[in-house]
Length: 148
Image (tube, rainbow, N blue to C red; front, side, top):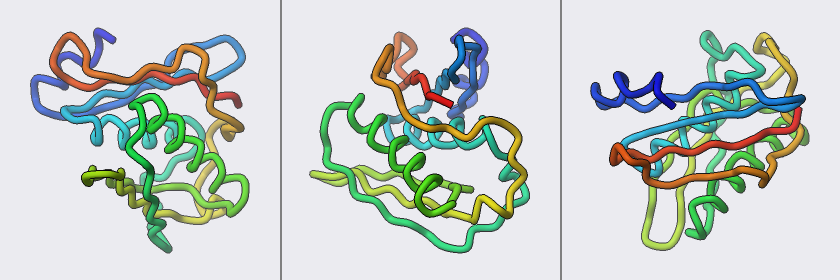
């Protein structure tokens, strides 16, 4: 993940997609675990939709148990995929905050029908090569493969 080092020096999180055979690979980073998780959600959304001009209709609040970091990443992205499939909702913004026992996530959502779809909509999060944790730079980073 060499491309994000200059961004890290400015104190910003980020995300990107990288080529992966027949699937989508998302890498994200942030100064905290929570920022990294939020960037992963934004990376997932930006891989298939342009939400830059979208306005949220509602806020969906999630509470995720404080499990392993990898479990949190998979559970959060699974929830985004579920909301796309079951409710036709796409996050246009995300806030992630840790409490003592849970992760409090607020997804500002808009109907998928109101945003331009620019790629394949994700179908599932893969556990293969899923990783999340502090990196050598003292930041949090994660990577996940998504079935499209």
